[in-house]
Image (cartoon, rainbow, N blue to C red; front, side):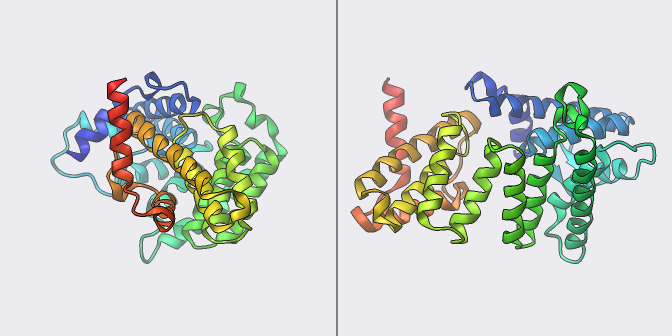
Length: 314
């Protein structure tokens, strides 16, 4: 059932449901990933590595990785999944001297960095490669030129710093993760996904004041498309900061943001697929819990169902 769901999502055109540019990127990344897997399994490991690496940089959520392929998976189904053996084969391919080898190491650390025993070593190797790439690109800025089509035009310093921050967070090194994201924003102040990730660190680790966190999430909302899949978390943090600092708004304001959060959850599920309650972001659940303290029990699923009933009637 999980494999069938993976194949269904891989074949679905998300961009048919929304004009959000990130949805178009997601569709392109899924296509690149499928093409790369097909190439790699046919024996062209180098081309496969380039396409899979490009997909990962464009939208890492397009990658379906399993450490070991199940015995019952058929040949056609294998073109939608990257397993540990194929990833290792691409890494050990001596003819692959492109940047994709570095990205594959980053992917490996991302997927297996939590593995006891050698996970931290994988992360350390990946971060060394990131630092070398960032330094190299700093001296050869033409690599970032989209017209050069190097890894689909996705190999940039800001993207690499974003990947580095994710690995640092996996190690629990939130201060340096925050610095990596800040450096990415120095390169491009409108690199909103880095701003989102940094704001999550600020808010969840209490590293900045509620006022600063609140302002940062308001900027994120202003920069995001209305259907951006991160909006639900942005609204959640606005609720949390208002309820923590009354100078940022009233309980009524928090309730208004709650309505927008629920609408964002419903819209995300319409576009990307329905989730269970335990799959919702922790910030969303925290916002609901804190609002409960002010006006009784708020059942987020009742709110979602209410919006869905209105949508159906309309």
